[in-house]
Length: 94
Image 1 (cartoon, rainbow, N blue to C red):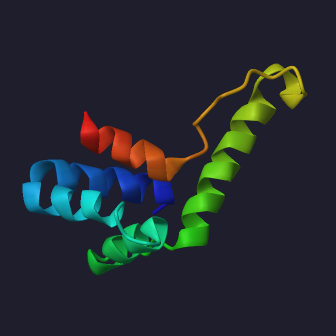
Image 2 (cartoon, rainbow, N blue to C red):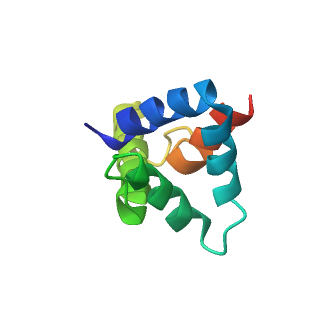
């Protein structure tokens, strides 16, 4: 399972369980929030690690850039689309 799929599953679980949602939101207050977030994912059985999370977002963004307008410098700026971590929390806060 890819990172995006895992995060979607985890987000659905967190939306259905208020305690789990609170635990994820609390990771943002940690001195190392991304590490705390990934640790919580692993506690739930999802192998999410800091660099995998960051790399997945960057790879996704790069693929989108390549698919638009030949992937050159004229490609539209897709601000925030490479940050799966922030997108996860945006979905929890809605």
